[in-house]
Amino acid sequence: MRVETCHFCSRPAFPSKGITFVRNDARQFRFCRSKCHKNFKMKRQPRKLKWTKTHRAARGKEMIVDSSLVLSQFAKKRNVPVKYDRNLVAATITAMERVEEIRARRERVFTKRRLAGKLARDRKREEDRKVVATGEHLIRKELREREEGQPMVAEQSKTANRVHGEERLRQKQKSKLLVDGGVEEEMDID
Image (cartoon, rainbow, N blue to C red):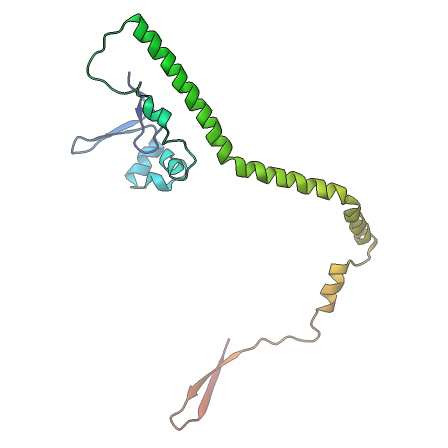
């Protein structure tokens, strides 16, 4: 049983699941679901769709290029049979566990570094909440004044800037330059 990757989104395409498309030149394309197959038929680029692994890798959100991924060639397809003995199997299993340990640690560091901006934003938001909590009496004072009907400072400045009388819109007038140097005015344009 071989688990192949989806040609479009790079997810695993399990046997008997998904769609296999075979082109006239005998090239096979495996798709994990109809969504990927439809997008492939529409000739969309996986790099431009946010839900694909290639897009995430191109934007630095996926840990694709990593030496632990390159070193772990345990899933590599080999055509030559290998004779196994117990010592070789035991050494291979310990090596696989060690590589998985390294990969997990690197993924933790990678995600922590990627989410550092979010953590900083959350810290800033928490500091802002503390500032509002310390100055809450000022906000309550303004709310009390608004309930009592006293105009606040900002509302008073709005009333001072009001225009009295009617406002007229400026209208452009179309004019022609005459040969003798005069100007002929035509109808108004809105």
